[in-house]
Image (cartoon, rainbow, N blue to C red):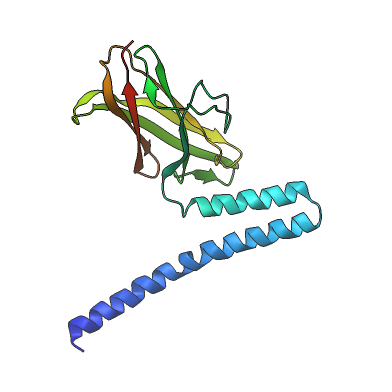
Length: 198
């Protein structure tokens, strides 16, 4: 083996050795949290069970990709987390608003161990694109969704209401881009729709 190959092999082993503790620590802490939850459940301890499960959720959260779950067009404004009535289709009259519900997951969350406070900071952009791929409307930073909580923010619904007023009939798509300002990541939700005549 040449000196260059030896050097590369040593560097690879050094990187692997450097990364190994954190790679092993996360699953170990996650498994410990699940074991704690099982013990608390056996002891009929609601607070201990839920606290341990929330700890496991926070540990798993760091391994998740930044994405959105439960993406739905809704028939009316949602009233809370999971409290929405799905719309039956994506066909709108020009006077109707488009209401989009989604639940972002995997965004970066900062935790201050001194205060016990979790913080997060998201923003959103959107583009309205016609059937030919032309951007006919949009806005950057039209919504900011940051906050602080003493509970891990894993149940964090977002609702976007888009006005379709003035658009001629046809096929469109709304591209809603969520940006995680702490984690420096983004995720785009594409929502097809059709506008019919009045």
